[in-house]
Image (cartoon, rainbow, N blue to C red; front, side, top):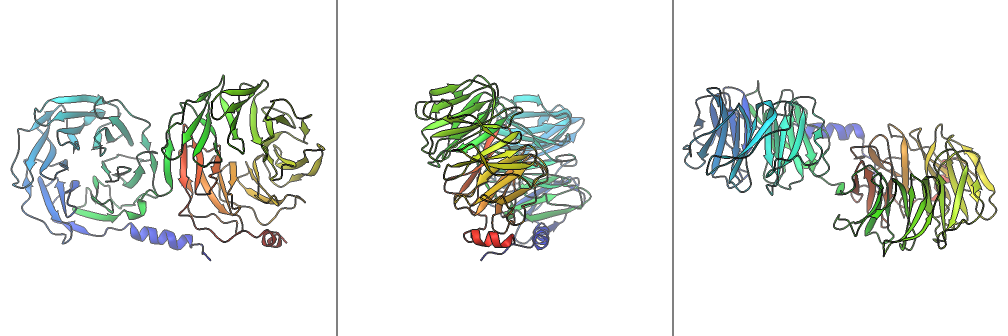
Length: 588
């Protein structure tokens, strides 16, 4: 039986892991920049004492004589093969970049001169170019052999560029600035790529990319680690009692090394706990907000809807679009996949319901009308239930084969916010705007349970347990509640932890876990029996409208502003099978 870790003890352990492993002392003035050699056994550091000093990581001692300069050394970089060192400084009103032979300690070619102070330098992976960060928000790329500028100067920041780094393939440049932002650029064209990484409250003084190519370490007032693909922070920041001027990953990504002003030390940090584990993939292709996501029964494909008027089908394995998007006349708010995976139903904000052939990607039936807010397939695939946008207390049923109405709308006692079929297909549960829910018998159209009041605000999402005994509701009151589907009696305590509206919930195929998400920009997983959160939240960079377990429960898919995210649940602890009897006993 798994145990739940004590959050206070876990937090203390995390803080302990964020203390320096070693401190290298020897500089006589503040340390401006640090860099690892490719062998991982040596480190170089630059200082206002006009030197670049080399260190043996194992012993913590200086390794050989330092490189002497005529002025304070503001930045250094080591070539990918470890044979050359470049150092940047400000001399005689000009920015100067010097090249050194790492083996002999002798200067290389004539210095490169820039218009303005040089605050950071980086070698390209090819070793043929050097990128330089300048004052006034500019960066520039030089050809080492000719000394000529090949890109820029490019202005994108609003204050001086303190830090620059190349992606492992050399295609991207990442810059950090005194304007508190981190930006990504095409290294050949100088065009900005994607959105900036935001979170620092002050100067971003340095950047380092891990060998896995996915993580970025940045520093200023503290040290932060980011996922380059999602642009999200990983874990908590390392707290430092002084500003940090430079940070670098070790070649194996296990450690971070740092140095800062008012501090003649070099610190070694353990970064192993910041490995990317939960986020598996980000599917990018929509050009407007993603509203809904749904898995196909094969578990290999996902559908997503967007304000860009399309439904995109994604191949989960490759993360790429599978075929052309399904184009619509207006924003698509919702999507549902038939149980056999052969049909796709999409609901439009501008009006109507479209039913598509999943293989040919052609419309089979189109139902004109007012905007569709929510929709669901019946378990046998015969019917589609829709909730229409705007005021109204009805659930409409449509024949999935003909596209015609099944019967008169099922009337409820309030405005409907969400809908779900029972596993046997005989009932529909509607979540209402006033915080109640109601269960309706499809054959008779009569209410058989409720309305049941339990939430204090709109019921935004509802799901059945796989055996049909339980109903789970999520609400804008930030809570998730569990109910006996036959009696409407609440079962056990609510799941609490969201800091804002809960927009969506999903239940795993084994009936043991609940995934929830909403306005607080998190995806959370809960143990249905204990009602406790399982593991840490998955952090998104925008509110989340839709979430779904994969058919094998291995993954969770969610929207994330313009993107679709795939999260790995394998590392989350799981209790034994849920006992419905025990759940009912707990509520007594």
